[in-house]
Length: 213
Image (tube, rainbow, N blue to C red; front, side, top):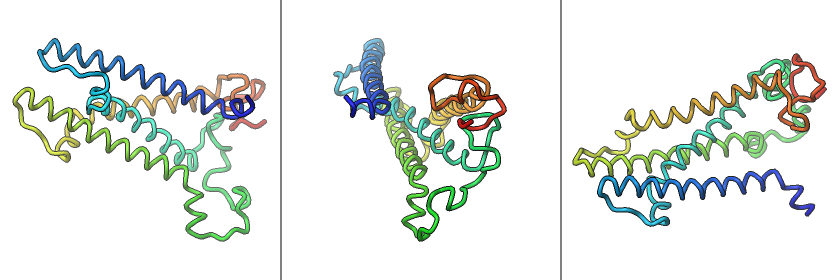
């Protein structure tokens, strides 16, 4: 029980992630087959749908926008601040900070330290690029399958990535993520959630930046 408690936050989100992914697969499979029937096309079994580009595109276009959000937020909060927000560093702490503040005073500054110092954003950016690439490839397959169904010309991958079809769905996800992060930064200046590390203490003034008194 102690182990479960110590990892309860990650386990909670892992559980609801799996549940949501399964729910998306079930709903997506039903919707795909309903459309296939209405157009006189071939339906797919549940597992065939799960490994299809249609499901892959639907999943990846959301994953890539989420990881882009976190990548940009990690980088932005190094150099930009928001007075009064617990999502920001103190207004006089802009930048990468000193070795003493980062607890690396006296350590050798080599590639290994640089890599570890930037490992979070590197991994987040790598996942974003990978999921963006997966979205573009699965979307490209879906686009060409639909083009063939309508006896239209297919496109190469580079051509597809330059289409309005690709960027409309991509930017639709991006703008919602940027709005959500911006809203959290600003609303957390004035609003509180007692007990949450994402909120300032209830009695702390709106002018206070960060979560510490």
